[in-house]
Image (cartoon, rainbow, N blue to C red; front, side, top):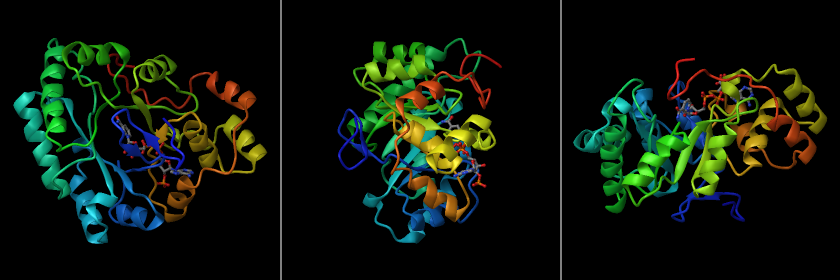
Length: 276
Ligand SMILES: NC(=O)c1ccc[n+]([C@@H]2O[C@H](COP(=O)([O-])OP(=O)(O)OC[C@H]3O[C@@H](n4cnc5c(N)ncnc54)[C@H](OP(=O)(O)O)[C@@H]3O)[C@@H](O)[C@H]2O)c1
């Protein structure tokens, strides 16, 4: 999935930057700063209530639409065939665009919904039609575990191209990551820095210092080195730049093995099926 330019390729051929900008809780002005820092991939969602801000800042930067990759997401309370199409149009309007590069089903279900499978199937039908019509360049999901993905495989001939999951040192969801790889689904990490919770982790601090890099760079490299794209969020222009610049070193197999088998840490507690 890794291309020579360092981008990742989805199974439909669309290229995805290895590092995008996560906009959840980003301050006004941060998207414009991120464009200046060199980001061209922006991750938003109807749930973040910031699509207007993202759309406006991208527009006012004057950067051509085709040079930017915009990913947004539909929230489970917006699920359904007609409802899904309407939610998509609302996102487009807020983002001031007439297409999305990537559209994700944000979570597989509203917890406790006995009809969650039906809601997934009808939403995926709507999203797949929009994809076939060329209004979305790639379609995917977020926080889907293998048994959620199976519902889509059984009801559609379009498999998700991306699964965006909480992934970071201390929470690697290897069962789902392996399943995605076996099914050609690109894996993308949300909260790649553990939402800042890993900054003070002793093992991360020690290993990062052994490689002569900051903990942030080390944590991001750990994911990218596995072919996982990342969407870190920061409001700080210096950290924006350093989060983009994560090459120049390779974490050894020995250290990767250690990090991959670390006890669970910095987990958000957010799980699609279980209240933790
Ligand atoms: N699909 C989903 O369900 C889902 C869920 C959550 C998030 N997401 C997406 O994933 C994106 C990223 O996740 P996130 O915002 O939860 O967490 P994150 O990117 O892991 O961490 C963000 C936190 O880390 C700090 N930070 C950023 N770069 C740093 C660096 N180099 N060194 C030290 N600290 C650094 C930021 O603070 P400063 O701003 O002060 O730098 C912020 O407090 C979100 O913005 C959103 O787009 C998706």
